[in-house]
Amino acid sequence: MKIAVYGAGSVGGYFGGRLAQAGEEVVFIARGAHLEAIRSRGLRVESVKGDFSIWPAHATDEPGTIGPVDGVLLGVKAWQVAEAAHAMQPLIASTTWVLPLQNGVSAPDELARVLGKSHVLGGLCQISAFIVEPGHIRHAGIEPTIAFGELDNILSPRVLRLQQAFERSGVNVEAPASIQVAMWEKYLFIAPLSGLGAATRAPVGVLRSQAELRQLMNQIMAEIIAVAQKRQVNLTADAIQRKMAFIDSLDPSVTASMQRDLLAGRPSELEALLGDLVRMGLELGVPTPTSALIYNVLLPQELRARRQLDF
Image (cartoon, rainbow, N blue to C red):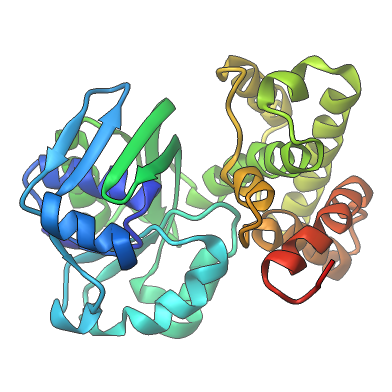
């Protein structure tokens, strides 16, 4: 398959790199120093699952020079999805799929508004990775996992083909019975982990070991389940218990990307992870007091990073 990785940062670079390593035709869309490093030295991935490099690597910052592709892995931040949807249109043919890997649950709808629902898959991934320097990604922990499916949950030929490609790459891959449930289950732990991590400036080992913080995580998860159920997404009764067990299994030093971005003064996924939840709760009449508190505490930092507030 010919696959464009739109946003070849830590997430797009890792999963796109694994597909390229497995023999797929992958084009990395990046910018700035990261793009130049990939062009001149290739893409280097340092991983607890085995280091690898992609050289030579096909990389560009101009989607129009690539032409239509079989599929697009979308690795940009959640707040960049709408802009990316417009910019990637030269990549889209009648059968092209777009797989968003953003945190939160709103990316498929954002893409569908621009590209049309038929082009969009639902998707999610789990990995702890970051850019060490331009052209160099480090996968530091968490079993790299990717899940995706059609928005109507039909097991289509294109989903099967992509699943087989990831299986050849050695990535843990799943086409769940309901991609909506799978996305909300990730949302269930990434939103509280990100919000409380940013508010406390503490890693997951602290969040889960302090009784008061652990209770706050449970409260945010309960609010997410209530909103999901109102949206007819059927999360199972044991979802909180399972996600807390997953959080307990993480290396104690793990931090979420939203937390790292906010603490570094960069724009973050605050709106996609907590802002969307608060807004959905208001629209549906579902109270989200704990999530709203954390969101409003963090919002001034987000606005300052976006240069909309000066202090």
